[in-house]
Length: 173
Image (cartoon, one colour):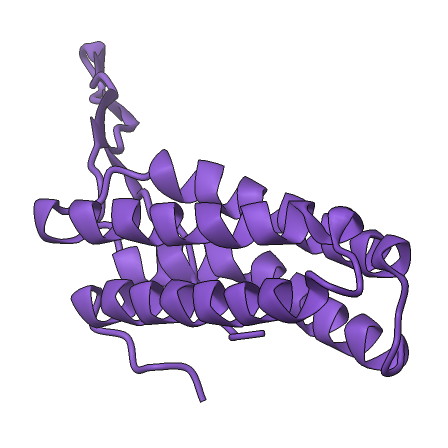
C-alpha cells in the first residue's frame, strides 16, 4: 500500500489595534477644570496568507495513520486471509480515505494546484473501489484484485506526490 503525506492548516490572523486614553485633572488656585480625553479603539481584521502545504499535511495526517494501521493489520492476516477478514481491515482505511478526499476538495487551493487535487481524488476513488470490493473476492479473483489494488495505490501515491510538488513539499520518505 503506498503511503501518502498531506496536511491542512488554515492560518487566519486577527490584529487588534487600540489607542489608549486617560483622564487628566488640572487645578489652579482660582479655577478648576477637568479635561477628559476619549478612548478610541480601532479594530482591524486581516487574513494571513494560507500555507497550503501545512493545510495539506494536516489533512493527510489521519490518512497516514489509517494507512499505517491498514498495512499492519493486513500483515497480521497471514498468507491466506479470508475475503471477509480483508474487508474488515480495508473498510476503516477506505472510510478515512473518503473523508480525506471530501475535506481536500473543500479547500480553496490555488489554481495551479486545484486540478491536481481533483486528479488525486479521482485516483483515490479507484483505490476506494478496490478496498470496498475486498469481500467479493474469491480464490480465482484475488490475484487480479491484489494487482489492481497495488496499481491503484501507486497511481494514488503518484497523484499525491504531484500535489505535494505543487505545494512545495518534498516527497514522503
